[in-house]
Image 1: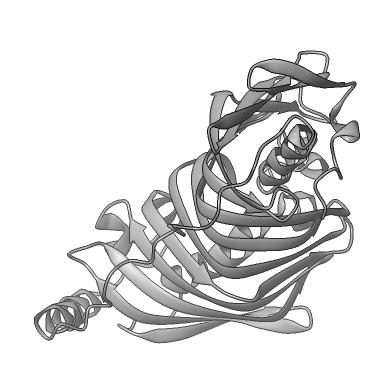
Image 2: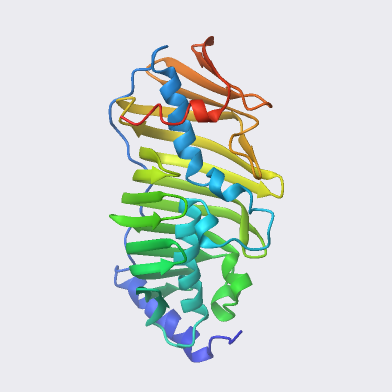
Length: 335
């Protein structure tokens, strides 16, 4: 890959130091915190709905439509989980822009899509912080059966200064932290019947590792709201530093959750913790393990997934409901 010229680095340093000394370095970083709000009231009767709320969160990074393909060396966009597909499409264009053919401090890069395009405006680079900021405009970008629309701000902290002086794909994938902010961003996938709107959403990506081009481990923290459908099932989730940690290999995907979320069916906010990551095998429709605890107002609901995919729901430690598999839980939290 082409290296950035010495003139480019000097220009970057000059611009960054000027911004630093003039106090226009971008202000404080966006936060995933969405504090406040009323706690949900958990009861034995609404405990099963909590199980569906957890399933909604897990599906953001590991829906069943994606699992059978994680063992391959590449995944088509139509087969990826919604958040992963959005991130892959947008960050791919971003990385191409940084690797790109324009050797300049601030520049614009455009990637054509079917019916539209993705425009990346690199607006600032701070070598001291290893930070590149870009504003990304996604206009009716269709890739396969997915269509994306909206704008995003991206703060990309590279893993080393080498990613600035030698911006190869491998160097850029080794990022320290990526923060994405967006509101009103939409994602539609006609194959998997996904139709999502991201409202006032901040995403923070960290600790990503790859197998080829496929992320096999990472942490995504969300603040904001995700509404719509995933795999034709309704989702309406508010996120307050909602953490999703995923690990994937040929056998399937394991997901841990933490932080707070709200859903309309529960009427308020709950706090999630993971005793055992939810594991969904490749080519399976339901998980075969996992235990998530959801708490609010001094009460707790535990969703325990057995090896045979049976799901037990506990309220304050007492068993209140048993299900044969996840299909009996999905759709309970739609109001």
